[in-house]
Length: 400
Image 1 (cartoon, rainbow, N blue to C red):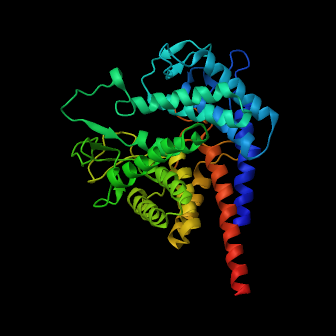
Image 2 (image 1 turned 60 degrees about the horizontal axis):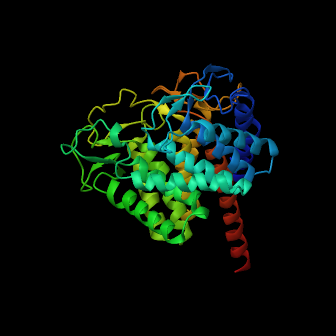
Image 3 (image 1 turned 45 degrees about the vertical axis):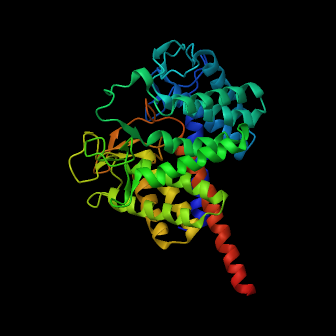
């Protein structure tokens, strides 16, 4: 396929398929907020509302309104979602719950800092779309809380016994690399640069272990490898997603050395994580080749593949490394053949190792209106940049 064909495909899938699926099926007109547990046809099969997925959908429709088209229905969806979150989403300490009933009654305590991360993202994006200072204040307040909690994100809800095997997880520093760019317009410039610098250093110098060629999910508090189930754990999707976050940061200062390092890590991660027998990227692996603790280790997940596509396409854009393009085409083919539902819309989320549909859902507790639309938007816009870069290079060659 040509760049033009890829651009048309991603744009069409986003605007004519994925976004209508959520706009038509997920809105709760009675209570506000969104239903995310949707069957393959878009019917609601469970009414619990998960805060981080509510926030992700607010972010998605705000982003589309800002970046694609000032469609009033998109902004209305985002603002109604935000109103539900403002009314029901936080406890007395202003920490964000994990889940609510459809009416907004708390179900699961505010144990998970990722609810806060995506709340900050959602309200920061919505503040951009509306210039509403109250949204900006919620975003700032939540971000401040994240920074205060980041060294002990689970607090009293942590199950770990202190002092025996103290580990630090990769998810939060990875998300912070992206979150700080989302909320940059609301923060002091020095704080932004400090958080970015620390985030990049943590990702590429601490969790990335060159002796293995991959990013680990957990390291000890001295930033060293820990020989345990948790310490040996690799989530290839997390590693790959983080690399496009870091490339976006590196692009700000034209740090070509950091971009090259991200590309090398990405290629190494794909080689490690790719299922040579069946195709697709494994969900979890043990860095030493032992059986992973997670029984779902060999599943193929939607978000892993769309994030990997973004990463190698950005890698190709910045470096022209043909290996990135070859991986992009390989990933696109697998993803389009296995995840995309041409009949009912949106994408399936969970495949077995052989690439067969494992769960015929389009949304649930973990899958909502986020990775697919964000991924399609990123692929569409990155491919446009690839096309423009090739055009510029061609013109320069003619003129030289």
